[in-house]
Image 1 (cartoon, one colour):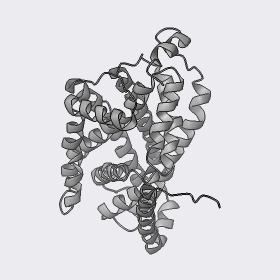
Image 2 (cartoon, helix red, strand yellow):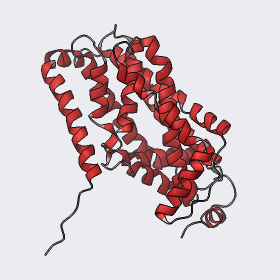
Image 3 (cartoon, rainbow, N blue to C red):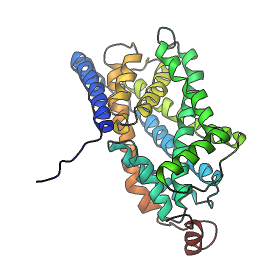
Image 4 (cartoon, rainbow, N blue to C red):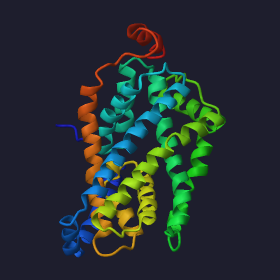
Amino acid sequence: MSRRTRIPISLLIGAAIGVVGLVYVAFNIADQWGAVRDRLTHVSLVPLVIGVILAAAGMTAIALAWRPVLIALGAAAPKRRDVVRWYFVGEIGKYVPGGLWTVVGRAELARRSGLSRSSAYGSVALSLLCLQVAAACVAAFALPMSGLANGHVQAWLVLLVIPIGLGALHPKVAGSLLTLISRLTKREFSFAIPNFATTFRLVAGYIPAWICIGASTALIARSLAPHAPFAKVFAATIFSWIIGFLVIFTPGGIGVREGAFTAMLSLPAGIAVTTSLVARLLFMAVDGTGALLTPILFRSVNLEVGDSDTAHDATNADEP
């Protein structure tokens, strides 16, 4: 008899949440289809082009902010072009259900290029946490100025990411978590845990990326409707991205991000739902283009410090 394939409950939950989000967006599209179609046929190119540039800049900024995280964990400083390549190629994994594929993708590319397993995997986990704390910090400034916080209690709840995230990043807490993970996985993880001052600097490194992402989506809205409220769309973007990241089992936050975005904005017919769809397609295009082009443009995989073979032997001493 053939063995039955078991589907992890986490995948089922993530898929269900994603489907609910997609259904919500689909109903919005159906309800406002006339307005959506009208918006799409009257797109203003200048703000859209600037939005595309900012989207690419935002995703590249996330990639570049990963490099200081690698260095903080004691890894030999890789070239920026290599880090960008690892990021874009590995990030394609976020569109696969399960939530861990983006970690595996980025970490394995870094490891195979000469970094230790501990530094590679630890840096991706740390970078994702820093990314979320930075997003919540930007949201903390954007929400009051946008006016979206009024009547949206859930927006303030998202800001709990800041104390929870910083608590997890504290050296003592991080050290305890690392020890627990080592025991559970029966693997020894050996890398430097950054002090709190370094952690704050790492978090701050992701703030420019979120400014670009929020501004990109706000400009997409402006390309569809010239008078779309920039601050409100900006704040709703950051809020929806955080929600999409928190629902880790939904691939790329698809459905969840769009549902949160459209639910938070009360805009004239078709603007919110059309913006959410165009932004999703645009950022997917940026991810895909980056994954295709960076291996061609950035062929080198050598480390800046020392010979690549020597670096590989030295940094992989902790691997089984």
